[in-house]
Length: 199
Image (tube, rainbow, N blue to C red; front, side, top):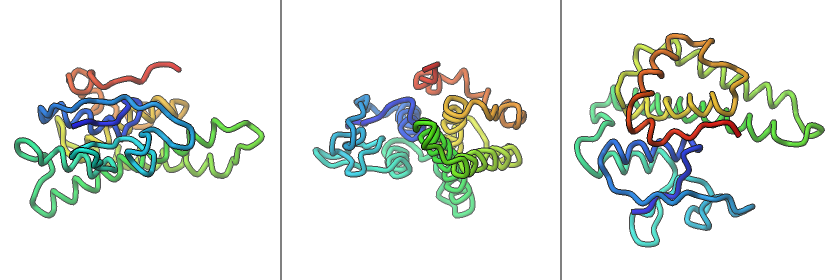
């Protein structure tokens, strides 16, 4: 299998971590942006990463679909089968992705030329980031560890938020969450996919 990905993308990084966690051999194709075509050269019609070639010339997307496929491919799934824990994990995964979405939208709104900035929209995305962090701080005791299907998206989103919206300093705002997140820093799957360094 081939995974079109980039470790700076929290969506792609989820799949990269999960493949390592499950011991699944995947060839990682580090995506390069190609203008209007996006990152995957037509392998995902939406031009987004990750995209997983799970059959010859057939690609799975988007990231929750890829993660659930990888999770069921080998060993016991980390996504529970029982209804309540299953949907709790799916909700947490969606919250993590929502945080990543807000950071992504904030980033691309603020890299426009200054005269094109829309302060109301920038504030909207910042508010989404802050609200997500506050919610995660409140439910920190539910997030579990080491890796769950839900917290996989949350861990990668928090790193992305620190990288692309560092001015919000989520760690100071959510000290309990920051301590929980720090517990992943020595995990080999975490370290092997970490790419958030200064531009």
